[in-house]
Length: 69
Image 1 (cartoon, rainbow, N blue to C red):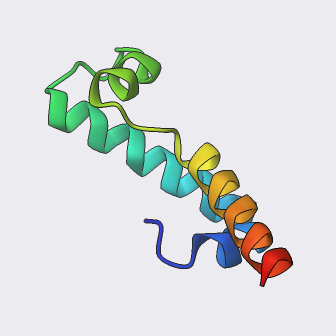
Image 2: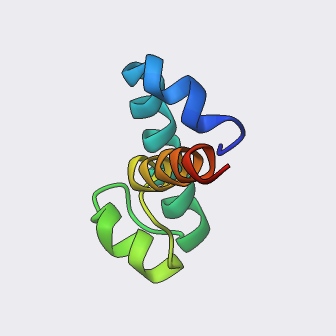
């Protein structure tokens, strides 16, 4: 999910939402949770960062590396 995400997610918000949806589904499958269970709870249980936050971190990391050389 994270391969080249700083590049492709900055151009396509729909793709970002689709990947976040897949992340939520994966969390429910791994935890064998009900479809109606809160995804925030599932992500916390797995110690996962929501995809859009992880992408933001990667974008900041990329910008920092470009500035610092």
